[in-house]
Image (cartoon, rainbow, N blue to C red; front, top):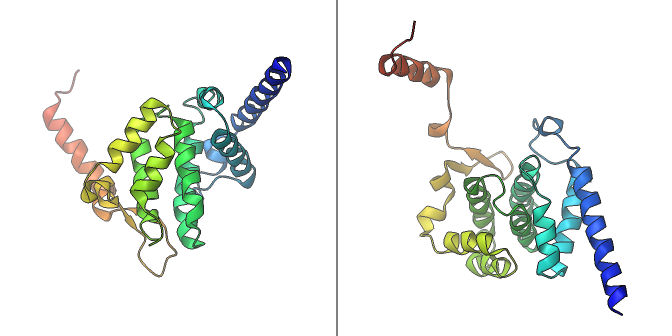
Length: 209
């Protein structure tokens, strides 16, 4: 019996590593222009999400340990897609998948990137009267690593203002565009702003000759 369990666990780990080997072949440039993951990448991420949700802490740890900074963008992109897709398709039940994707990424790249994705998912969850965002976030926190659990619960504990899109320089795309997120106009860097910045830097930093 013990041997069978060890064999099954070994197969799961092998499957996990095979999925990540495939994900590592993806490059940002393959889909950066449409800001969406290709369908095959979505399928792989959702397989990992299903495994993460159905597994114990050891397997969850193995999944998160496979995420490197070279592929962490995949999980942020997926979470953002879920935040958008849930509203467009009126599917609140998929919101937890976006949160689990962030739990898998587990603050590998930069915790601030996780906060932006959390704000997008939180905003989308508030579109549905049957969803209690704080409760949803807390449920996923219960399955997350200690460090991401702390991040999730700290986000839930923020004021509504500090959880809003505006706190992260975002807003909803105005109609008639379909539901999406965009950078607030005041946060966008224009050529004029860049030139002003360079002029200021020239005044502040002496030119070495």
